[in-house]
Amino acid sequence: MKKTSVGLAVILVLASGLLGNGLNLNGFGARAAAMGGAFVGLADDFTAVFWNPAGLALLKKGTFGLTGDLLVPKSKYFLSSSFDMKTKNKYYPAGLVGYFQPIGDRVVVGLGAYTLSGLGADWNNTGFETALAYPTPPTFFTPPLENYIWRSFIGSVTLAPSVAVKISDGIFFGATLNINYGFFQTDQWGAYTVLPTKPPTLVNLGQQSLDIKGWGTGATFGLLVKPSERMSFGLTYRTQSKMKLRGTMEFDNIGLLGLSDSSDTSLDVPSPTWLAGGVAVKPLENLTVTFDLQWTNWAKLSTLSVVFADPLWAAALADESAMVLDWKNRLQVRGGLEYTAGDFAIRAGYYNDPAPAPAETMNVLIPSFSFNSFTAGFGYRRSGFKADVGLEYLIGQKRAVTAGMMPGVYEMKIWVPMFALSYGW
Image (cartoon, rainbow, N blue to C red; front, side, top):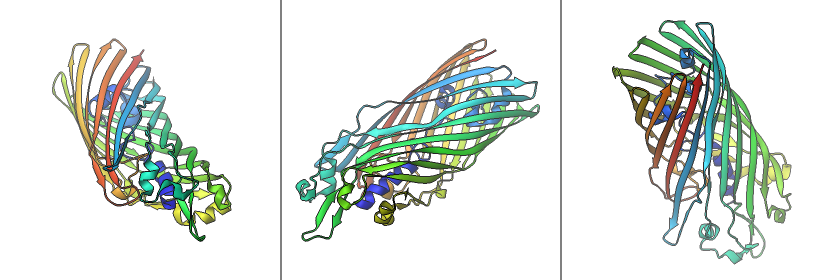
């Protein structure tokens, strides 16, 4: 159980919206997201700063844009016929904002900022600790077990200075510098350890809290090719970015082991490479169909280690501070369409998002699911003004975990209402 405690802290960082499936926001802009996020080959509005920065070169006017997403997750966990719990009703905002300005006929520069992640879990705990420790009674621990807080709040923000160039009439190139800031706040039971007394003492470590944050840098490169007005192809490459996270970890009762209650804590986390390709076709004048393949190099995440500044903590938790993940590379398949009628547009889409994490790393704070996601929305434009709304529904495939860190049955569904506003002048 001691290993469970620290291991969960590691996985929380890895499976966060910064790096992980399910909590990573799968795109920005009510228009792009309503088309299933199949936007790499189209990328013809200000949200191209995320999807494919080459598309920024298509902007003919100075453009300001703002998007907003509201993630509403619902999760269930079943440990046995005698214990289950659900998450509280929580709302997690996210979005993108940017301004982009043409310079001459061939160059567009600007600045975008977006919340690459923003989610978490807050469980209605009805005795999870007792269920995990079964058959050992709660009173056998020192101090006795209580109902502790199981909660996570995770997010990251990317600041993206951008430049896009029109190389020729049908070829565009763009790049962004990605300055990433991430934060991770988690609370959970700290599990227990056994002291070799006579009889053995089960030391309940009590509430555990992790609060780390930090910076990292990377880049995104994009290419857009438009052989005609009815067809375009896009390619986007987002580099690996190592986040250097620093903060503290605390245990309420770790003082019973002769250790201080908290320690400065650090963790270096590499975000994986992202490679995406897409095509957009207009079979009819008013109909656009898009298709994307988006690949993530999750296998980069093999073994990561939490580092404690307190030497006593480092010695006591040395065997439990490293985590072998064995994550797999994954490919998302996305498709979408947009039909316009005058100033109005109707959109729909779908994508499949497979989980990179094996069952052994599943946990209640940040579980990893394979999602089937359905999207829809509509838009309105008049002169330089555009307004879009959309709705995304992510259905996580139920996972029955029989072995590993936290066995049980996991379920998750997420609703994401979205809006976007932009104006060009």
